[in-house]
Amino acid sequence: MATSSKKILLLGSGFVAGPCAEYLARIPANTLTVACRTLSAATAFCAKIPRASPLVLDVAASDSTALEAAVAEHDLVISLVPYTYHAAVVQAAIKGKTHVVTTSYISPALLALDEAVRAAGIVVLNESGLDPGIDHLYAIKVIDAVHAKGGKVKEFHLHCGALPAPDCADNPLKYKFSWSPRGGLLALRNAARYLSDGVVKRVAGPDLMPTAQPFTIEDFKPALDAFPNRDAAPFREFYNIPEATTVTRGTLRYAGFCAFMAALIRVGWLADDKKNWLVDGVSWAEATQRACGARASDEDALVERIKEVCEFPTEAESERIIPGMRWMGLFSAEKLVVRDGTLLDTLCARLETLMKYEPGERDLIILQQKFLVQWADGKEETITTTLEEYGTPGGHSAMARTVGLPCGIAAQLVLDGVFSKPGVHAPYTKEFCDPIRKTLESEGVRLVERVF
Image 1 (spheres, rainbow, N blue to C red):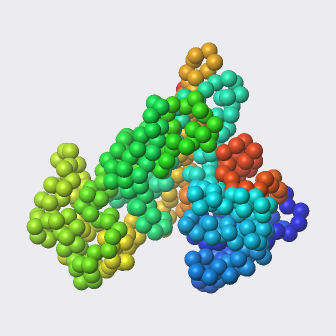
Image 2: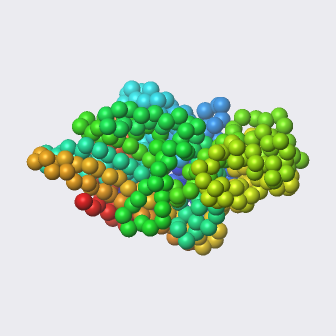
Image 3: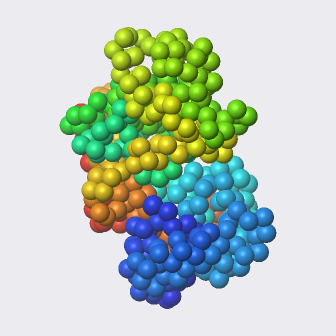
């Protein structure tokens, strides 16, 4: 544990920041500065955290003077702002010789700073959340154990979903947002890449939702769908499994979600370009008409066109999705309120209300890794590691806990000098993974390992 006082700068007070700050505040030697764009948000957050002080700071400001000054006054900065700002934070940290921890993937912009980070003698530890984060801790544990016994990992699969608990999945999409849905919806159009039987496969953004396939987790009853998540191919190298012929990483949703979202994409409601015709006073039905090219804005005309555009595989699918669109208000004569001039943002504003968690409801994190292992004698086994974590009504969500807690643990390990090698890092080795995983397990978060 830390023996001298440490000053920590927490950038952002969003939904995952609480468990992170609470963990760090347990150590009496730690003091926190919580920086937000508004004093009210920072002050409200600090009221719940011992030895925490608020600070007004905008990391997006064109003038980096304030950011550099704040970072330089601290021993470590935790960046929970959008990943696009991490490079600016690290540049400030290089000048101030301040360590950095993030929960985001290492971006090319961060990799480009590695030499300067090493020259400054600081640690920049990324991917210290859930996915990426907790997934690495158990992937490395299993892979190292297999290699130590002379085995080979022939296939590696990771799937993770942030969902409402089954008893709270009570809308047509079986999904709810605990934060702004914009990022989550945009991710449904991301291109993806993975390795399958030795061949790199690519999925174009518009094809992502239609690629979803049924997915089963042992002893978990609700039906799930899975679709590829970002670029899985480099993880053969990151995880040191050159023998693997298949490496996939995927996102989980309850069955039916992906088909519904694919329909919304085809209709045009996830378009993020500005539309000149999208102005306050236009009705939802009129906007849907313009989006999909229907002949008129009455419901019969809209449904007729949506069926043409979506080409539903069965009538049952049509009868499931079209009422869901009606529930969202897309056929309504109600006047919409435009946000940022785009269909996507205007829809997001509606979903923030329609698909929010109500008091007393809880979320669920479900994560599973699957390893197809070939032992030296030729025998094959499947090893799984599974996390099923529920939020606490009135307390922290499962998402906040599984992202914020490992982030706080990683930060403390940097402060304690357990992680001291300068550079831009992610936890891809046992030297990083073992200390974080053991501490996380002592906090009650662990994956259950099974062999088949």
